[in-house]
Length: 120
Image (tube, rainbow, N blue to C red; front, side, top):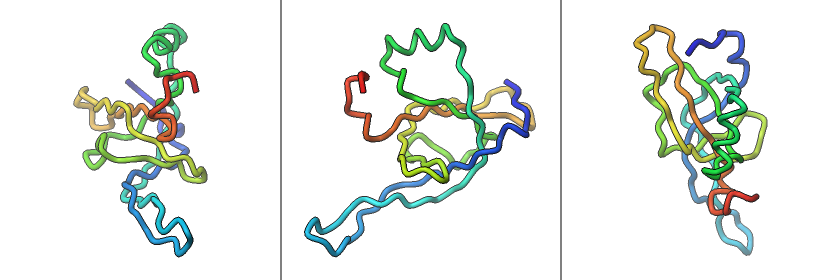
């Protein structure tokens, strides 16, 4: 897969969540803790694949491409810089071409939609 480097014009943070005291009646809350920041490009899926994903309940996911990176794994969470949405990594497809400039594909879903039935 080839992606023009100028398309990597968005930033995403990968990390974990941490429970912190909020000094309110609720007591504590989960906060995203970034560990790594990378440039990425949105990856456009073919229309036929979009139809297949509906049957697999993956229609509410987004696909991004990052330069291959050994520090990202599917146990982490992700947040696009400038947005508040925390994403869970649904699938991490590592580059296997052996090219010096390779790209990994990452499928993300809003972590609040993880427990939904795929209909929102």
